[in-house]
Image 1: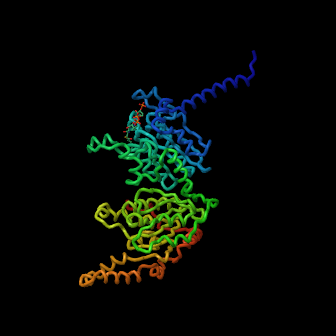
Image 2: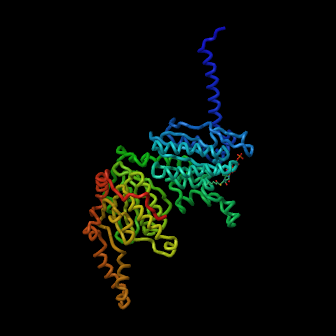
Image 3: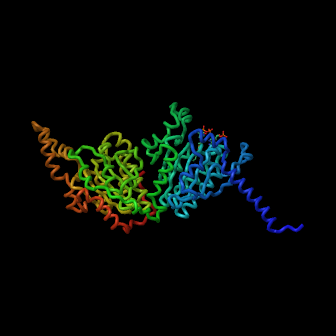
Length: 525
Ligand code: HXC
């Protein structure tokens, strides 16, 4: 009997559709229902659940869902889960495109073989080509042991792309499970590392190897959990209590960033709310060494609730983070008198210089708020290489060609005056409050050096010290000597700060600066 061509096409078509649905279903199950259940029992989300939280609803487009490994050793020929332990693709976050990968721990513990690496490299290449940020969600046992050198090659391919992408597109790593061995070096090459308090850890050699080599006993978490990397090593920029919170932090972080190095950061005029600027004049204490919280100044000067701090628990003597001023993203670096009196130590130098280099690569203006008594003295500081670390900060400020604005609110002493975005390092607009003290050092220290012999011969040296210190303060502890020489462009009332910064950002928005042609500078590391 005659069959209409339409019907026969339909039959074949529906078979093909079923085949595709089956494959998709299979791919979605990753390592299978039991392993998904295990993942949940450990208090962890699956790779797909994490993507759902990260991206705008319904925006995720998956790629390479049927990729499998090609390994035939160690009984692997019969064990070829679709997708090979990583979910890759593109999506949008707040309407802006990103590429992403999310490691699936249910497939060989998320371990990385050649096929997984190729999938990750493919989305990295696409991200670079299209100028879109790349976000990685990491949860992996590291190099896939069964694949030998192929898995090492895979890591190498990823590290190479991390380096090529550096300064071109923002790279964000969200660590939500194990990240061990050489695998830590891909996140370490990216711009931002986020870790969840639960279940995330990063180390080069795990507790067992540590015990075998050094005899030390330590847990996974104490060796490389978010507490360690968020407060001691500075490897982690942001810590979330839960996976959901950590992923939300990544969304928030992206809202401050441009898509790539040729783009400008998004402007959010609709969210501008003015804070009461008159409060600024009540923050600096009468006593010269009395601490206060620099974040109060930052919060008043910036758009309401816009300050987004990075490295909150590491090197607390310097504060870094993004904020908006008049709707535009700025990178803020500020000394924090609450910790070490705001002095700069080797960690603070590293923290600030890295942040400055990120801002400079991605067209984000830099605002520096200064209250710094100097570099931190001490044997530990000298022996840990404060010279080398401090030089990074000088290099980063000098090298940066984005708009640079500074406000000295109290102390700016010695080398730390120079390093904290002084005019001499190419800062465009240098402002100072009337409370600014710009000097080679604090008055008492200076008098003790200048009048050492005289003080030793006095009957009441304390009185003489106090008298000379006051004279020294009257002469130097103000912004006017620097203003006379043009090192400070303008002395302003505290309440004028926000307005002056907005004007400065406006006038500097088309800033162009030529630096000598070269392959690249050699920043001290
Ligand atoms: C292959 C792996 C694997 C790996 C885990 N699995 N790691 N398979 N290669 N590297 C598998 C396990 O066999 C298991 O399979 C499943 O993943 C889940 O692992 P479990 O151990 O049951 O899970 P858990 O108890 O949560 O422990 C997770 C873990 C642990 C802490 C990550 O698996 C572990 O210590 N793995 C090894 C970590 C490691 O040393 N990696 C190599 C680092 S060297 P089944 O079938 O039982 O479910 C490295 C070099 C890279 O990465 C160099 C780059 C330059």
